[in-house]
Length: 169
Image (cartoon, rainbow, N blue to C red):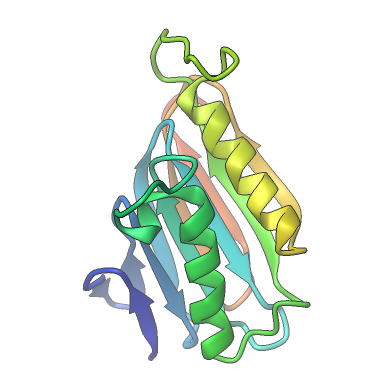
């Protein structure tokens, strides 16, 4: 199994846990999981031919100088795609699924009134568009938290929420 992450992932019986501000890539059909997505954005990337898959859990929309690349939607997606490509994924085949970006608190931003969750979703979409990766499914926004499970064999992304139920993208 090849796993690439910004830190050591937690692997238990075919499951690889991706923490906040981390990403992981899998080539062996494991399930990549992350939890605690509130305003954070979860980005699942998948190459359907090679079954190379990756999952990122980004906290903030755009990188400033310094900081861990996976902490930010823009540099996290770029780093995730680079690691997937190094593992055999073809960027021309990779598709994306997004989840998270909730408005968990009643705060307004100085950035045009967008919440941090909305800004995370916007940054992820803009980065994926620039990289020419199609977003084929999304469960974003709202006011509830989410947990994700990416099946590396099928590319299915299971989104679980205590308040909004479960769905598969």
